[in-house]
Structure formats: structure tokens, C-alpha cells
Image (cartoon, rainbow, N blue to C red; front, side, top):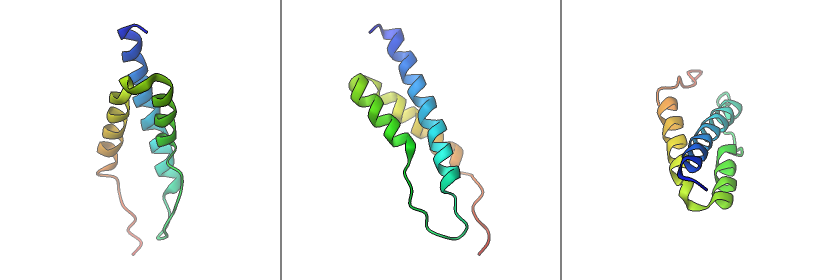
Length: 80
């Protein structure tokens, strides 16, 4: 694969990781209870890393960083 193709795959992986992570966090948000669920973005990252090898690790890092950064100031449940 060409270098430009890997850059494209890295950004696609970062976007998929972010979107799946946001969706998982929205679906797992409970009202004062403990939720145990599957974090779908980890599965996507694992599948892509197994298929494309370790050259696309930056995509996982970028996706997780953006997900954590956007979730840092998210409003918490105030029903206590």
C-alpha cells in the first residue's frame, strides 16, 4: 500500500473509533445505575489492526484522544 493510502486508513479508523465510541457512551449512559456494556470502538480498532498491522496505531490514538477530549467536559448525571 502507498503511504497516502495508509494516511487515509488512519483517518478513517480515527473517525470510526470516535463515532463508535460516542454511540457506545450514549447507549451506556444510565440513570444512577452501573452499566456493563461492550465498547464497540475497541472491536473496530482490533479488527482494523489485525487486518492492516501495526502501521495504523496512530488512528487508534487519534480516535481515543478526540473521544476523551470531547467527553471530558460532558455533563454528568445530577440526580443524586
